[in-house]
Every structure is written in structure tokens, then in C-alpha cells.
Amino acid sequence: MTQQLRHHYFRHLKDDIPSGIVVFLVALPLCLGVALASGAPMFAGLIAGMVGGLVVAWLSGSQLSVSGPAAGLTVIVFNAIETLGSYQGFLVAVVLAGFMQLIAGFLKAGIVGAFFPSAVIKGMLAAIGLILIIKQIPHATGYSVLYGGPEAYREEDVQEFLLPIYDAFNSISHGVLVTSIVALLILIVWEKPWFKRQKILKLIPGPLIAIVWGILYNLSAERWFPDWAVGSVHLVNIPVSNSVGEFLNNFIFPDYSYWTNPQVYIVAATLAIVGSLETLLSLEAVDKLDPLKRTSPTNRELKAQGVGNIVSGLIGGLPITAVIVRSSANINSGGKSPLSSIIHGLCILLSVMFFSNYINYFPLGCLSAILLHTGYKLAKPALFKEFYRKGWSQLLPFIITITAILASDLLIGMSVGIVFGLFFVIKANYRDAITLIQDDSSYVLTFHKDVSFLNKALLRKLLAHVKPNSTLVIDASKSHFIDHDIVETIDDFLVTAPNHNISVEVRDIYGKERLVKNEEFIVLHDHHDEYPSGKKVLIQKNIV
Image (cartoon, rainbow, N blue to C red):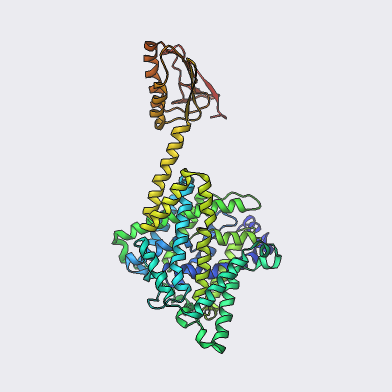
């Protein structure tokens, strides 16, 4: 490590060490909870947390982002494991997804996230929040008739979502229900402004308090109220290692025979696309929260996430993304550099190696409460109100995306949402790009921004409104680019205008469909040989 890198990582050591420990305390229950919701081995969530801290944070250019297993991928992971019929087969898809992200980073695809409508992305996250709530209610109530993980709950259609909830309340475990409800109340209270204003309480993560409550309650109940204790089936169960060799034996490796299964590649592509989008969205949010307003390199982040997923898949971990909850905890606790994320990964590694027997005291009901709280924050009513206030152009893609995801799956739902989102974008562009103003027999046709072939039909419609024996000014001074189809439509109108005694003045139309560069200016194509009104336009380089 060079002296410059050492200075970069260690100059904020006094801030990054306590911040890394706080992030670890937030991440540990979340890693276990995401694994629970995904139907994967608990240890897989911890592996992903380790890799996110020790590998991705080291390679990423983001100063404050924290990576690990994400709640946003739980639906995909659960469905993929069920479809492939093997967790080892699923790991092959995780490795492939990592390679796809790595290639995307080298192809500079980090900018792609900016082209997805915000309403669709937030609709996806809201749908995931609703699914988390629905899937975790059986665990939060101690439903054990078909217990063994979320595989009892399928997302085939909206009706089947509700059946586990009904069954769960008919098979309640009182001890699990108490731990879940109180843990959820703790998480809600911990988010209140009064708690956030207290310096000491601000440093203690709510999920940690919820877990501590669950452990203390269960230990007390086992001693004094055995009928209200939490059964062993409702506690975390990860392998306990007594030596380094035993620890290494806990890792799971991919089943490479699945290379020939076409479903693996579909799963990998889905993981790569959704994981990359969630990473880019989290990265943008983290940069906005960063007190120093640093900008993270998106392409480098995709490469780091790709390497992280390759490593995680090779040793049995869940897929990884940048995650906003842990990143926010990092910022709020005073983290300044990637070292805080690296420290959090190191703490997860040490806890798994030496304190697994204590982690196995964690009640699953508390993890479910954490996931229920996370799901609520992703799909809170205020979000629906926000999109309602924004109007139909934002509300409809948002609602349609949620509905489509709940009725089918994440990828199909996203695709449907994007189609509707783009429809409203095109509609808005179509309506606002060109206007026609009439004053008696005088008309002014104005191009308010760059116009493409999508505006061709609107242009023809507006030109058809120009009456004979009138004057028309076509003003394109506000646009820097005009599609060739638009210029061609205007040319056709100029040819027929004299037949209707329409006098036309053209301003800054020609040449904007083709730019020819010289040393001092960008010279736009000159049509003045064809039309008397044509003119040569010079635009300084710093404007274009």
C-alpha cells in the first residue's frame, strides 16, 4: 500500500473505527434477516456481509457506501433457488451475475441507471417492501405448521400472498409473537426524532436493541415461563466453529453442472440488472447524504460489485449490492472513508469465527421484525401520497409496477413498469417540445427544446392549423439539435406554402441535424443555396 493510500485510509481512523462497529451491529441482524427472507442458509447472509466489507469496500471508489446482502434481492433469490432446485446451482448464477457486472463496468454502463424512470424504480422497491411484509408475518407470529423457511410462501399470484397470513394467525406461537411485536415497537420508537437527537442513543442501532431484547426475553422465559419461551426451531442456527478448519468447512461451493441449465443465465441476468440498479440508486443517495459531497465513480462501483459477487458466489454467499440502510448508518455514525466499511466486514468475520454460539441465541422473530420495519420503510403510505401529488404521469407507472410485480415476478413487473414509464416520458416530450401561437393571421411555431422524430406527428398537426393567406414564423433558436425528419417535414411545408399564400420566416432551423467541426467553431450546415431564408449559424464550442 502506497503512502498516499495509507494516508487516505488511516487519517480518519478515530471516526472510522467506531462507525465500522456501529455498521457491523446494524449489518449482522440484517445479513441474517435477508438470508431468512431469501430461503437461503443463514451462513450465506454472513458470507455476503463479509465479502461486501472486505472486498467490495476495498475496490469501490465510494467513500461511504456499504455493501452486503440486500432486501431488494430477496424475492429474486427465493424464486431462483426454488426454480433451480438447488442452492449450489443458484451460486453459479451469482458468479455469472458478477462477471456480467464486471463487464458492464468496463463497458462504462454505470450511466444506465439514470435512464430508468424514478417512478418505476421506487415502484419496484415498494413492491419488494410489500412482499417482505407479507412473507415475514408467518415468521413473526411463529407459524410452524409448514415451517422451514419462506419456501412455504410462493409469489404465484396476489391471492396466494394472503393465504400464509391467514394461516399464520391460526397457528401463533405466543413467545415468538411477543418478541416480534416488542422488537417492532423498539424499531419504530428508535426512529422517532427525539431518539435521533440524543447523541448516545443515536450511536446505538435500533436493530441491535431489538436483538438484545429478544435474547433477554427468551433467556428469562426459559427460566421462569417455559410455555412462553421461543422454541429452538425459531432461533438462528448457524454452524459453530471450534477451529479454523471447521470454519472453512462451513463454506458452500457452486455446483458447476448447472452451467448447462438455461435458467441459470436468466437468473444471473436478473440479478445483475436489478442488483446494479439498486447499487447505482444507493450510490446516488449516499453521495447526496455525504457531508463532504463527494461523487462516487459508478463504473468502478459496478466493477467492485462484480468482483464481490464472483467471490461471494464462489464461497457460498448471497448476491451483494450497495445498501442504503447500512450506508446511512455509516454516515450518521461519523464514517469518513472506506475503512469503516472494511472494519464492519472484519467484525462480521470475527463474530462468525469466534462467537457463532452467541449468534444462535438470536430469535428469528426479531429478525422478522427488522424485515417488517424495512418493508414498511420501502412501501410506507407517505410514498404513495407523494406520487399521488405528482400526478398521473408518475402515479400510474408507480402503481402499475407494484401491481405487475405482485402479480408476476420482479423482472416482468419491472419491464411492464418501464414500458408505461417511457410512454409518459414520450407523451410529455411530444406535448411540450413544440407550440403554435396564433394572433389573427400571424402564427409563431416555436421549438422549445431539441426535437426528434417522435415530434414529427405533432409538427404536422400544428402546421395543418396554419390557415391560408397568413404569415408563419418557425423559430428554433432554443434548440441545439433538430432531427432530419423534422427538417424534412419543414422543407415539404415550405414547398407547398406558396400555394396557400402563406409567407414563412425560418429562424435557426437548418444545419442542426448535422454538425461539422472546425478549430474555433462548430459550423452548422448551410442551406442557403436551396432557400433564401437559410443562413449559416455559428455556435461557440462551449455552448454545444
